[in-house]
Length: 141
Image (cartoon, rainbow, N blue to C red; front, side):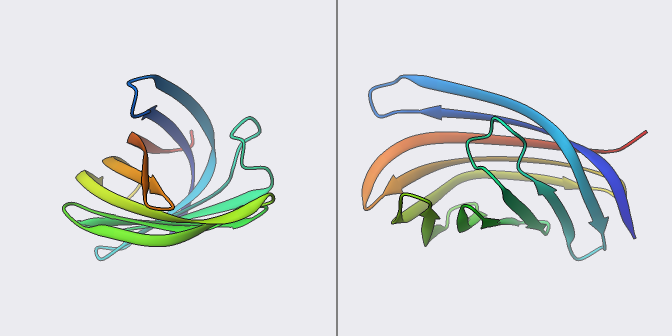
């Protein structure tokens, strides 16, 4: 069953020199739950810097996969202790990303979810930032 939901997103990026950048956004989303996996789908909100991009999250009890398609295309995978290598495609070019998942915490329920992941992002093999991504999904009233 799919429910109309609100997603609250908080991200923090910290550069190698220690400078941090925080972003908080909310948007409408579609959320579906099965005991094996939850699916979350939404259009990136204005101000996200991702243009006209649809984001799909597939979440099980141990991992999160984020797939973006549209003006920006990428696939990112988060599972504690694992490294993922992928490609990030933007209007101005394409580059290789490495994601080292340091921490992943997931709570999934029938009409809500909480996801927290902390990871190191490398672009073309060079450490770009330490990141924290927190998502709260709640059924729309």
